[in-house]
Length: 476
Image 1 (cartoon, rainbow, N blue to C red):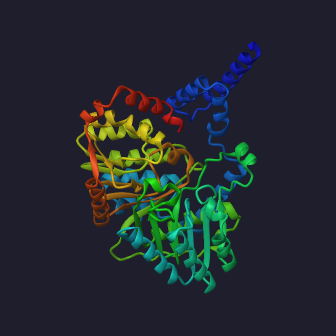
Image 2: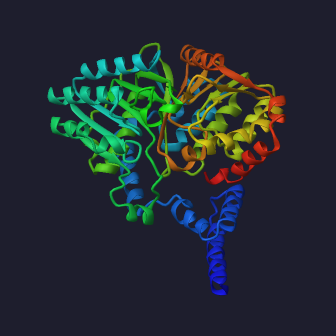
Image 3: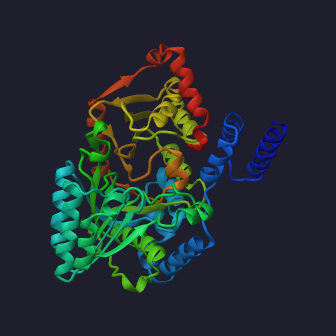
């Protein structure tokens, strides 16, 4: 027994020293890991081995650096110019756009247009029509790609395009799309000539555990057609009924169809993932940019564990800090770090109308509890919180002052901040922002408002539970 106690103490001491040596960890994250190690003997150490660090092999880092080196060398004209921000972006928002550009080098480009899709049915119909009209290439990447109506329709459209000579590349995440990857539909795509790739494969789990993490995922949702059209938003290639988690349905998403130079940036982001996974070079990709005469300024933000640490929460904080009148955010997963939490509270205190919309029923009970642990702090600062009742609100949206919007795959949680590969488009345009804001207003109309008195009336056990979960929130 004494030997076991001594061994446990040595293990805890070893991991404690490791945690203390990690300069990039925030104090709350360190404390959360200490709680796990002490409260879960042995098992806590196992958890740390599997999920404690964002480990990436040198080979993965080299591939990432090589891909972006090619992009910077051969496609710089599509990435935009730092000097253009002053001419394209209104003064209050320039720092946020500059920060966004610093993440992976895409700067604001002018001449873009966008249509907000009415619903899932219109998104699928427009996307399939665009693919059926493709003449040169179609590139798609999804975290979750199911064999349901939407997923099958996309696959069939790619099969038709490939058979008529269009270059089709399709990539799916190994975990999120694991059922599709084993299906006859995936094989049919390959047989038809669609070039296929698996993001972050799990076929060698022991190696993945030793060199990376099993839960490191490609969460992006990218579709590019002929270098002329791109779709960006929160929607996976799946029906709103979302069979794998049907009891939370419908899943409510948002998707925009873009044309203009920002399409080339999304193409380059897809290319970076494809090059890292397959080893192909940028020479295999067709790139073009045709600006619209009266289009708006926009840029692509592609974050991930190979980019600068903390870049996503810092981007959100930069955008919130730039707001003068209003900030409205919808997200299904709200587990913010201190940076975002304090920026939201500060914005409300200085008179900005801060509105947050979350699902009333979340598919993750851990996230739901951690999220609600912050309600009192936010409501006390003057933020307004709504909980969406008509399904799982999966739309990730941010609008500022009726002028600036961010749309894409990033949630306000630590998975999006540290672990997932994400894609977003940041834009400045009153018309498009108004359309997104109108959709946000629809979410609010289908929600219940959460008041401070309601939160204060929560029973003690509920508050304790929320705060216990939030204590380990920094490592969720």
